[in-house]
Image 1: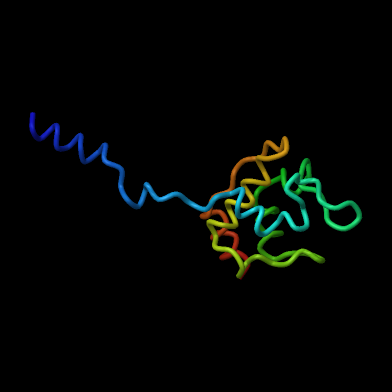
Image 2: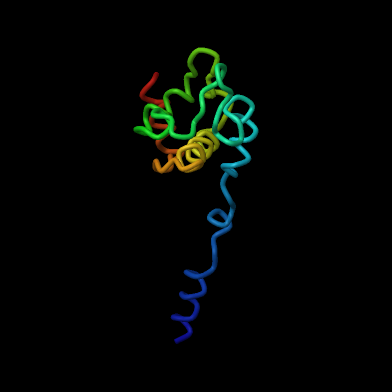
Length: 118
């Protein structure tokens, strides 16, 4: 019985590694994307595109990841500006906010896209 209780305590005690939160998606977006794409996701007409309903934002994750990694036009590359987890958080925020219903992005997907682009 004592072994069962000890095992239950081990299993039910949160690991310090698992208990640490990841990057805050809204904060990462606000600090890195909102200047151009706005907190509302509507962008600035004639200058920066909105992300609400955007076909790249809501399309296949690899295309959105590549765009954020490498930038395009006036959009800077975030490859060396954000960690993979931070990039995944910002992308996930944009893909699931303002009525967007695309799936979240993981840090592993970003890491994989970086490796494929080398």
